Length: 150
Image (cartoon, rainbow, N blue to C red; front, side, top):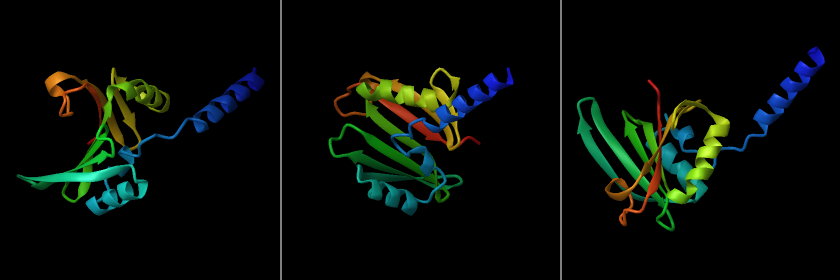
């Protein structure tokens, strides 16, 4: 019996090590400064800066910085509060939904129907259609929101 348990344990460890890496290092940037986030995105070369927006809040300014890929179908938005990244949102075309949800199902434990807790914070995946869509043409998209769990 012990022989079988050891074999199963070894197979489980090998399975966990063979899990594919996240296709987007979005959540890994939580806690970084604005310069560090921009530098890491620039090194990847996938997304390009589009705009930023700053709001004054009671505890200080909150800045949102947006990036898009060359085709304009994928977008990244980072929110900085008190000098560090506290929220990141990845917006993908609806066709990428299956691939992303399967990847997250393999790597992280589900908390709810579309929520996962990760080493970097919490992931929430939402499908946005019609007027709720971030796209200018209101085509359906998947919004994957990364946030630090307090």
